[in-house]
Length: 483
Image (tube, rainbow, N blue to C red):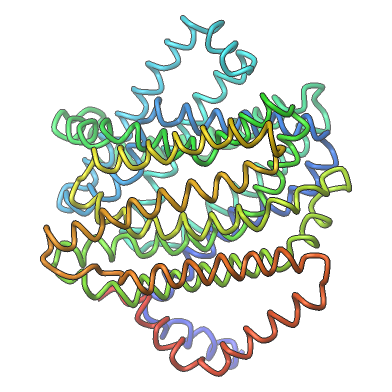
């Protein structure tokens, strides 16, 4: 008993910000981890065609989510909570009301134009209506979880995250086993769980803020978010258009195999999500307080952590594909290295874009993202018919590299003109790290047939980490500092 009390005392002695970081990371890990662990079940219960159709629904869900919600609960809300800190409860409640109203309007639009929209998306009408409900519930949870992060309250977030993750996957498996239409069954189970768990969050935040409509905050949110719709749409196209185009050009089977590889590649995105959600308030505060130059160590160190996680995943790509799916999905291993490298590049973009969001460079953000999305569509249209569906992974990487480079240039411009400082993230460090990660990803991909060679390379990297452990630990402390 004394030993347990001693350990608990030691945990309580850990600084609050470190405990919160660990808690948020656990939330991301649980949310993504439970989904990943359920994948082997779904790939064995569903055919490659059914798995492909489900992922096509998810791609359209992401695209419609931009039009329907305007993504108000993304950068707009995260920045607004800091900007309107003294009235954040009312701000939160009014934005919940805005999102609810937007979904209600779009339900009417779908009812009026159900046929053409179903024909455009190749989705049955019932899936379109379920999609609208999911867009609302995901927004509800996003507002609530972001608010919890700004308050550094992690306990309730962890409990709800675990509950939702377990119930969604369990209900999904049961629906796929019992319903004739397995794709719709899986979607329906997802909707029911989120409605049951998240409706109370919506009602609670609206009640606490004593507001559903506030003209000032609705105007702020719409004016902030609407110019960014092309940006969010382009961002979604970068992430989702490949699966839709593969379905149209190569069939649902190929889309299913690609989706599995894509899902595995995004496995380490939990590191991205955890770091961004944890560090975002700190980044905005330091920019606001004129201390942006202090972000360099934190940013570069977080990039290194993401790179290490992504390269670890690439190293075990063949084994992961065998674990998560039967042999019919074996070709998925071919796309894991380029897509996982894209995950690293995506993280860098997020760090750079935070400066653009803070200074509200909406049209610049929109222009650069739209250019990258257009490039992705053109490359997919040219390369998929000629080189096969696997080419979509490489066009995605190329598009993300261009996308991140454009946002990096904009960040440098903001540093020089708005903040009167040198670029927070030096070009030599950013480009050097990018080249190193892409080179190691290529080497690990080429070594995929030889398990022992991959282990040897990882062992050498581990030895280097041990040698440099003091410097690394010191930088990690700086990374999680919220001063």
